[in-house]
Amino acid sequence: MYKTIICRYHEIATKGDNRSMFEEKLVDNMKYQCASLENIFFKRVRGRIYIRKKDASAFTEEELQTIREGLHRCSGLESFSPALECRPDMEEICSLVEQSIHEHFDPVLAVRPRVEFRVRARRSDKTFPLCSREIEIAVATRIEKLFGEEHLKVNLTHAEVTVGIEVRDVNALVYYTSYPGAGGLPVGSNSPVLALLSGGIDSPVACKLIMNRGCHVDYLTFHSYPYTPMESLEKVRRLAAILNRHQKPGTLYACNFSEIQKKIRDVCNPKFRTVLYRRYMMRLANMICRRKRLYAIVTGESVGQVASQTVINLGTIGNAAEYVVLRPLCGLDKMETIRRAEELGTFQTSIEDFPDSCTVFAPPSPSVAARLYRIEAEEALLGDMTELLERAYETLEISVDR
Ligand code: ATP
Ligand code: MG
Image (cartoon, rainbow, N blue to C red; front, side, top):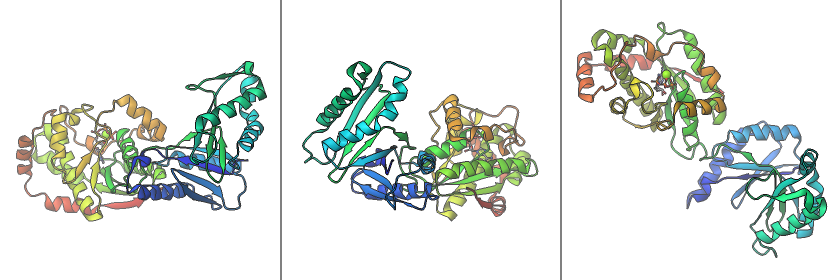
């Protein structure tokens, strides 16, 4: 029945001269998400992208399901609707609505005396004899004739059923359902980044948020084998695999951090350990960004959540980074982050209880105000760490998961 899927974007539409680049990236991502369907094609038409079948047949329910799942993950896409098609003629549009509307109104009328509905029309062909408002009135009048006024109520804000109509110069489309895409901007439309991915709840959510701003994400995780079990790393691998469903697979870099931690434990004041660990994590992230051509470091830090995330400590940690540090969760509260982790499908994995690298040799009362001059004095005690950093870099293990 549905031969076309209308796909809409929002933020891209505000772009100027380089809008075409954003649209190409979006189509690229959509194709990737629907790659298992070989018999479809994508067509860009002013402000919309259409998906159709190469043989012009209707989508099967299974194909629609695959497309729904894929496009829901597609950043840059606002919403999409399976649509029916006819010629751009008012009589044809009305009779297409009359034929198809029962499927949507009858289930409501079976349980309630009235359907609350609205008609939403959009006319991109300005030579069409009726304007959008007039199309809406004409279609609503036909619907009233069909069901009787007593069974209907127009509700422009909270309609149970929306009858959508788009009129173009070559065709008209009628749809009833809109599904959400991931919104934001398409992955690949901004520079690639490196995310510090722990096994916790926060960093996977940070990765997804930054993908939605157009950045392809590679991941860096630190483990402290043998002080943390290999299961901790395996858990991060599974988180990366979930995240990779939302973009062309990013690489997971895993680095053994235990030698650096031991050195910090042996030489420095225990209350500064966590901040010192973080600064060395940043330095390894710098090396990877430089060598793998990535342009920002993403973390799941928020403000004030734990001792290492006071404003002063975040400043001291960020100071060791040579790249801009993006902290997409900065202003979110924990409940909101948890809600997003559940939606993303990472929450259940994140709460599996394995020790994290950061908890190794963690002090009982870490400093909440590790000022830079104090930390630099601690780092002076460590001496030249270049060799330890290079040795940690050599432990880099690489895997790509999907
Ligand atoms: P998360 O739930 O993401 O672990 P958190 O609230 O537990 O965050 P911390 O454990 O202090 O906070 O970590 C803050 C951020 O530092 C993480 O979001 C992550 O970006 C980075 N990070 C911490 N531990 C690691 C690790 N072992 N490997 C890679 N990155 C890490
Ligand atoms: Mg953590």
